[in-house]
Image: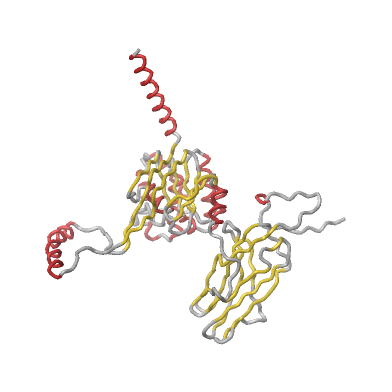
Length: 435
């Protein structure tokens, strides 16, 4: 009887272990209780030579004695900050996961830990497979080596054989469009050249896990399109992709799931469309700008009022706007445009307010009011973010997300069921029929 119970207990234990191993075989990334703490203020750590270390060791007791004699504390006041705290995630093999959040949320820190560039303060991260990383410009390349040599070096780091690297070499160079410069030391590359080659290396040397940061924004539009297509191909081959971006359209197009970070902690995880909606709704802005909350646009220009009306507005209706500027000294506005962005951060419309017959000049005592109407606003229902482009003296800048404009659906036509917002695009165009 005892032997039978022991055998049954051993069988159940082995069964549980086998099920655990089978579950783990589907996990590409497992992060448990991950935290990263940085010290801000105080002396910054740096690498030292052996001579400097020995000198420091000899001089340290004398400095402490001197501090005690003078009545000073040898401790240096500093402050710590948690860039990540208590982060736990599981990413399955073949998943494409977007990581979203505001600047300083901890997105890049997480990718650096997963790429083994920095060590966590607490917790652990397990990665099952070779990792190809594309983080900030310069990571992973030796500046003194040529592009050709860096390709070979990166392949060797990933554990590839020379024959495997040679087989992929021409494809990498062609994708990066770097044939002329492949034998030039990468320290002479521009940031765009650096990114093109770095992405080509990371994507083509067949890592099981591809980690890509916002660095793709450095490339031109055509290259970004090519990179997104390549990442889609990589995910289609069953490899895992982690993608950090502020471009919600790219995240929604490429990813199936999203992780939302805020102040170093995970505040949302799951379906990508749902997480993007939660993230965007958490940072809703005001409906206009008024004189109680003016915005400084530059050293010599202030935005006193900026409003669209009505707001909310029905799609297809007339939209009025008023913009008021003030300057403490004489100045002139050379270029002015209103920018309209979708909730996913894509620019969808522009109101060009340059007028050949009108000069926007302020003499230091008056304000300028720009007042106009858009006869029919064709945007489909949704929430839009309003920005401003301005050239004035030394200021030439896009001022993004100044306030929100809400568009409601137009009146439902009798007998017509409206299309779902997810398939309607951006514009609602009117049609005239030929009878």
